[in-house]
Image (cartoon, rainbow, N blue to C red):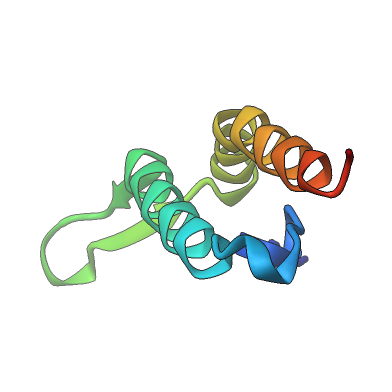
Amino acid sequence: RTLLLGDCAHTVKPYFGLGANSALEDVQILGRVLDQHTHANGRGRGRRHCIDLTTAVREYSKRQAGEAAALVRMSRDLDRP
Protein backbone atom coordinates (compact mmCIF):
# COMPACT_ATOMS: atom_id res chain seq x y z
CA ARG A 1 0.00 0.00 0.00
CA THR A 2 1.11 3.49 -0.76
CA LEU A 3 -0.02 6.91 0.39
CA LEU A 4 0.87 9.92 -1.74
CA LEU A 5 1.28 13.34 -0.15
CA GLY A 6 2.17 16.82 -1.35
CA ASP A 7 3.12 17.24 -5.01
CA CYS A 8 2.76 13.52 -5.62
CA ALA A 9 -0.95 13.73 -4.84
CA HIS A 10 -1.81 17.13 -6.26
CA THR A 11 0.70 18.29 -8.81
CA VAL A 12 1.05 21.98 -9.33
CA LYS A 13 3.33 23.91 -11.65
CA PRO A 14 6.92 23.97 -10.35
CA TYR A 15 6.88 27.77 -10.29
CA PHE A 16 3.66 27.86 -8.25
CA GLY A 17 5.74 27.55 -5.06
CA LEU A 18 3.38 25.45 -2.96
CA GLY A 19 4.92 21.97 -3.16
CA ALA A 20 6.66 21.98 0.21
CA ASN A 21 3.84 23.91 1.88
CA SER A 22 1.20 21.47 0.70
CA ALA A 23 3.35 18.52 1.78
CA LEU A 24 3.74 19.97 5.29
CA GLU A 25 0.02 20.63 5.53
CA ASP A 26 -0.71 17.09 4.33
CA VAL A 27 1.61 15.60 6.95
CA GLN A 28 0.02 17.66 9.72
CA ILE A 29 -3.49 16.57 8.75
CA LEU A 30 -2.41 12.95 8.28
CA GLY A 31 -0.86 13.00 11.77
CA ARG A 32 -4.10 14.26 13.30
CA VAL A 33 -6.16 11.65 11.47
CA LEU A 34 -3.78 8.85 12.51
CA ASP A 35 -4.01 10.03 16.13
CA GLN A 36 -7.81 9.94 15.93
CA HIS A 37 -7.76 6.37 14.62
CA THR A 38 -5.20 4.96 17.06
CA HIS A 39 -6.50 2.62 19.74
CA ALA A 40 -4.73 1.06 22.71
CA ASN A 41 -4.89 -2.70 23.14
CA GLY A 42 -3.90 -4.56 26.27
CA ARG A 43 -2.79 -3.33 29.68
CA GLY A 44 0.41 -2.38 31.40
CA ARG A 45 3.71 -3.16 29.71
CA GLY A 46 2.02 -5.31 27.08
CA ARG A 47 -0.08 -2.40 25.92
CA ARG A 48 0.15 -1.79 22.20
CA HIS A 49 -1.27 0.88 19.96
CA CYS A 50 -3.12 -0.19 16.84
CA ILE A 51 -4.04 2.10 13.98
CA ASP A 52 -7.07 1.55 11.79
CA LEU A 53 -5.02 2.57 8.77
CA THR A 54 -7.67 1.97 6.11
CA THR A 55 -10.21 4.18 7.88
CA ALA A 56 -7.57 6.82 8.65
CA VAL A 57 -6.45 7.06 5.00
CA ARG A 58 -10.05 7.33 3.83
CA GLU A 59 -10.69 10.13 6.33
CA TYR A 60 -7.49 11.90 5.27
CA SER A 61 -8.51 11.64 1.61
CA LYS A 62 -11.95 13.08 2.34
CA ARG A 63 -10.44 16.01 4.22
CA GLN A 64 -7.85 16.83 1.57
CA ALA A 65 -9.74 16.14 -1.67
CA GLY A 66 -11.27 19.61 -1.94
CA GLU A 67 -8.03 21.40 -1.11
CA ALA A 68 -6.07 19.30 -3.60
CA ALA A 69 -8.60 19.93 -6.36
CA ALA A 70 -8.48 23.68 -5.67
CA LEU A 71 -4.66 23.73 -5.89
CA VAL A 72 -4.70 21.89 -9.20
CA ARG A 73 -7.38 24.24 -10.61
CA MET A 74 -5.42 27.33 -9.56
CA SER A 75 -2.23 25.90 -11.03
CA ARG A 76 -3.93 25.15 -14.35
CA ASP A 77 -5.53 28.60 -14.47
CA LEU A 78 -2.11 30.30 -14.20
CA ASP A 79 -1.30 29.16 -17.74
CA ARG A 80 -4.58 30.20 -19.31
CA PRO A 81 -4.89 33.61 -20.97
